[in-house]
Length: 197
Ligand code: SF4
Image (cartoon, rainbow, N blue to C red; front, side):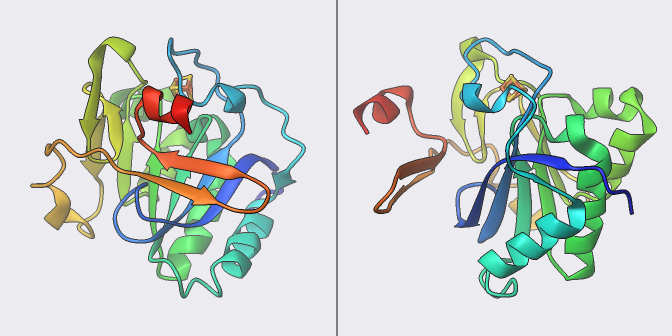
C-alpha cells in the first residue's frame, strides 16, 4: 500500500442519492478538467488542507458510519477521483475487504480510463459501478445518479445488476441537510433550487 495522500474536499457519512442504498460519499479535491457549467467549482483546484492516506480515509469513514453499520457502500465523487487513482484504489480495496460496495463518478469515459494508464485501470477494476463522462450543460437531464445525457452508468460487477432497468427513468433526487453550522445540498437539485436555498 502506498502512502500517497488523497486530497479530500468533503465526506458525508450517509447519503441515499449518490448511488444505490445508503452510502458514505467522499468528494476528492482537484480535477484537471474544466467542464463548462461544472457544479462543483470549489472542488477543482488541487491542494486540499484535508489530506488522508488510504488507511486514514478508511478509518475516518469507519468512525463516521459507526463501524460501517449505517452504509452498504462508498461512493467517490469530486473533483476527479481518477486523477488520484493510485491511493483511491488502495482505499477501495480496504472498503471491499469489509464487504462494502464501491462506486465512482468520473469526468473521463470508461474508454478513456481503460486507455489512460494502468493506475486508473486498477481503480476501475475495484469498482462495482462507474458513472462516467463529463457534465455537458446542453445535455442536462434528470436521470438516476447523473445530470447530463452523455453520462453512463456502468455496472462492473453483478452486485447491482437489478438496477439496470431503473437507470433510464427520469428521476431528480437530492438531499438537504440542515445543521447548526451549515446547509448542505447533495445529489442533483436544479440550479434554481440551489439559488433559492
Ligand atoms: S469532470 Fe466533473 S468535477 Fe471535473 S470539471 Fe468536469 S464536471 Fe467538474
